[in-house]
Length: 539
Image 1 (cartoon, one colour):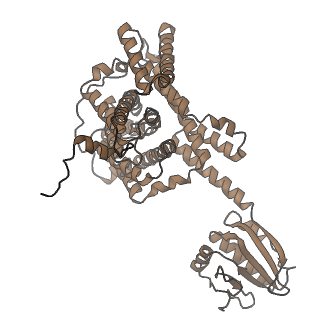
Image 2 (cartoon, helix red, strand yellow):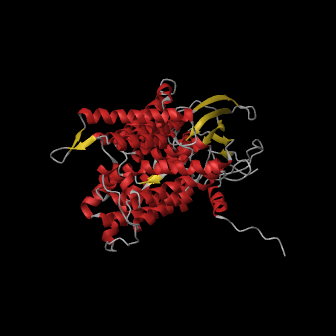
Image 3 (spheres, helix red, strand yellow):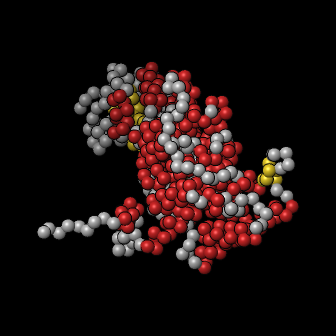
């Protein structure tokens, strides 16, 4: 009988799914244990966040928990970066609140489905690659602003329900006890790796502090004080909205904004996690995964979501590097909802706040404070601008503002680099050569026109673009304007050493391109003869 391979066991399947190999090419038991424990830690940190963001959006807490489970599971299995965590986020919740208040939760579910479809289209058309246009100063401002946002979000856990039903700040023994537990959690997270790395430090800290609070019955807020976590499996349901053009007009603007915010936050988190794990690429795959996750979530009663940088940092720093950790985080969260809600509700919020405070410390780019004094002022301003807009508005707006500002600064600097150096021609007696340096585009077109003196130049003038580049239509118009001035003065103008892409640009503009013997390497020089009104003759 021919040799047949042994049947694929569940362990073998897990190893193939993960793609994380040990020295012998297999996932080791130690690695698998780290991934599972890291997933458990992330799941515990997801609970208060999902509930809090559901309250922000004005929906039932289970809507946030279902989103955290479904989005987390789909993106963990199919996303562009193993180890990255996704779920319900505050950046999306603040956009959803107006829609829910004015039209109800069913319109939210329909919007989340459309949001997912738009994100899938972004993945199909590979729009995720444009995330590479985000400059490094914008990334520094993004992580700094996000750290501040995470910190501010935790401050809500220091509020309790007052006598009148409104939330008021803690005071007295409750406040001091909570602060002590937060500090203790942070100290345990710092100390545990120095003693052992067998168990993720945040999980140890949560376990120790939770045990202390439960055994001593300390009077501090618990997870159960936020809301009940008990629920059933999410069920499939088509959103109950009219399938009309009016409905589309209502949900499309929200879906577009949510899709853009979700993708920007996810792709920036993708890059940040990639810089920590040494991985690159996966932007389009992440767009597809985020889109598919939101489509599924909308049909199963979730509020949608995107990548969560805080939980992703917890996962990475706890040792999670593969799809197992994210998958287990989602499955643990589902188990909390179905079976262990009573136990999870006993965990003190102070322990989870302590974990998130350590995330804040690890996320904030502290080196950027020193960098502000060494980088150009424009880059320092971008860092501060993006940080401020992130805190004041949202992450997507901050990144867009930062990219636009950086582009304007670059354009201004590039425009100031255009200049010309005049010298006598070595190939044509009596002619003058202008060696153009710097990019010729819309920003430098005006300065380019002012570089020349047609009245005092000789009868033949050569523009040498060896050190320059014709970029856009404004550059062509500038060349034509200069040519017109020389034509009016009765003089001859030649263009030389244009690069192949400049050649294509001029050809598309309908201008005749020729080869010249004095330009054998580039083979795209142009002679613009003012006396005949033609762009050159073939040699």
